[in-house]
Length: 165
Ligand code: S3P
Image (cartoon, rainbow, N blue to C red):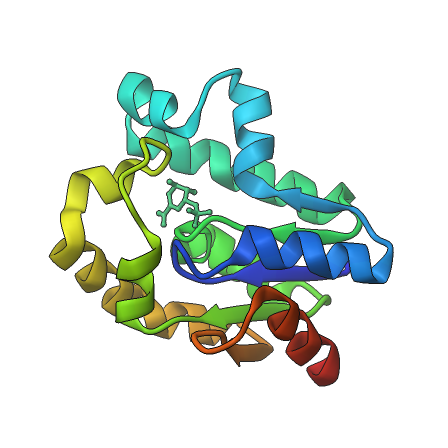
């Protein structure tokens, strides 16, 4: 890979990853999309049928594989850096890990229960913000570059990334 995007749900990893890849003429992959392709079902379906631990196992396998063999820009899932084994992989990776920071109010304004994110449905607003607070230090620790995205458009986020790498 050439760069890895991390951050909480709703931080814009997928949108920014696509735009960044276009700008650099690289391919973009979203970790959740690769998981869905491998499992042959949606993330919600994996959570429903097999539970979150099975999803996390698959997520780890796909991350290890993609870091070893993938090219271009990778957007991770919001929970990816939280598992110890993934944390180590990201810390050791020699490509820039870029954190898209978001304030709690931005998260709430962007995330609606659209049936695509099991944790949004499961946790509700307070639970989501609690989860974000627990995860923030971990995101920070795996990242080489941090961008505060709240007041930026996705294109401005890409500009900020390119100015900092
Ligand atoms: C998750 C985030 C999701 C997806 C899954 C779990 C999380 O990815 O991997 O629903 O634990 O934060 P996005 O951050 O792309 O929504």
